[in-house]
Figure: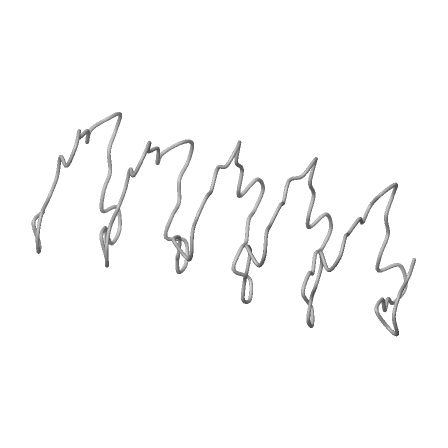
Length: 141
């Protein structure tokens, strides 16, 4: 272990590892203030569960909160460039695979889809389009 002046400060068993519990190269983990806080088993991974380049995950406050298995992906389940997914409150809620798209499944500029209450409800494949199946300008629908 190599450190430079106060690089690791702990109070009574704050860092516990089994085997290779913490491995870093370079400045893999950088925090200011309370950068990473967990209660219980806050972060659990198998294999390379979390991989980032640059500051791929940035949060202010409790931006990512899950209960149970809140975020599950296989392969590249969530891919974004820039801030493509922005929500306030619980604006996106799904059970099962309620949102599926291939290619550019849902595209909007501005406030593309807005609803209060249960704005869009479907059973089975109630809305199906090929190409630009539904187009409107202004308050088309």
